[in-house]
Image (cartoon, rainbow, N blue to C red; front, side, top):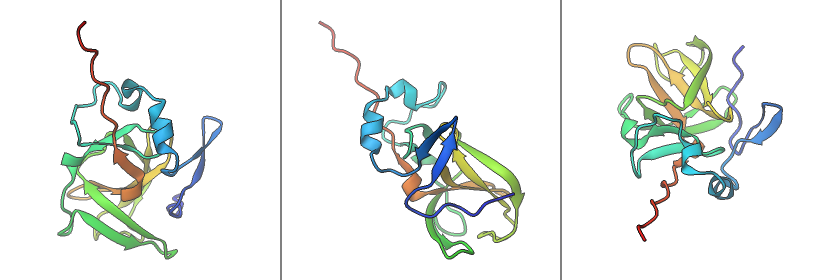
Length: 158
């Protein structure tokens, strides 16, 4: 069963027995306590200044260079059947996102492109949608991604 996307401003999820608030509030404090190696999965390609992380937990999701135009634009604003408006950017890939559920054409915003919700692989927060079809892409919510913090500089020689 596919549930409607969460309302803007956050969505409390239960992940691994703990409640996680899925919004950007307090992100700086949370990220400050994480080492750069904890924010990106091993094997993540480096892209200084272009890496985009989950706003809730800091996991690397995609790179800015993955943005692509879809239906003539890289950014879209759409409304779901409940009247909730979403603004999202389109990306060719999002390795840090998990697509969940069975693809559906019901209420799709892009003709002939079935969608599934996507969530962060680490914390489970709603990031947007994966759209299938002839040219698949991810529609990731603007507020769900933040620039990844830069890796700490190596210590200078003494």
